Image (cartoon, rainbow, N blue to C red; front, side, top):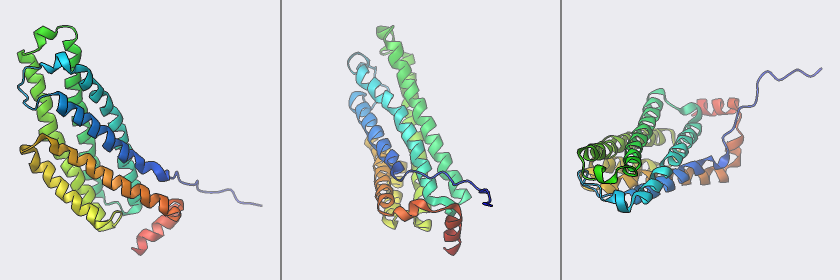
Length: 233
């Protein structure tokens, strides 16, 4: 008499799941580029762009939630790649910095979105007002000081894990360290340095996607096989 299965087959991550990181890179790069080209760098500018470029900025803000969803999926792909090799310390830093980055990015986007919404009712009162300058400065500080630093911590933790577990080539980890340095210190000199973060995610996601597609055996490992391979390492 056949015995019933005592365990269920685990849910497998799709091979093409790494495309989420590519989508995140494209969406965030597009959103940041639209923002940088439409909104002056100076956080104390009066806000004349609300008359001319509010629709473009609104489009950029609408892309950010989708970029955030793709980023969460990308984080899941990296953790699935690590499997049982994931270290608790680096996993905490990796997850924490990633979630903080998203929270700060969404907060800054919400502040700018609130300015655009308010400008549709009282544009002349808002442009050049103290309330506009305060809100604009808050969004600028959140993105260029806090969010960019969390992105740097995320890249450092992911690169360190990649260097020790070999889930990605060493050159991607070393490139990640360089990107992290740019994110930590480059924002002092240029506001475009933030684009280095989605660019690095694009490189890592492309590698994972190609590696998954060319190694079908790795995608069908059972939990017991994964545990044995981690022990042998």
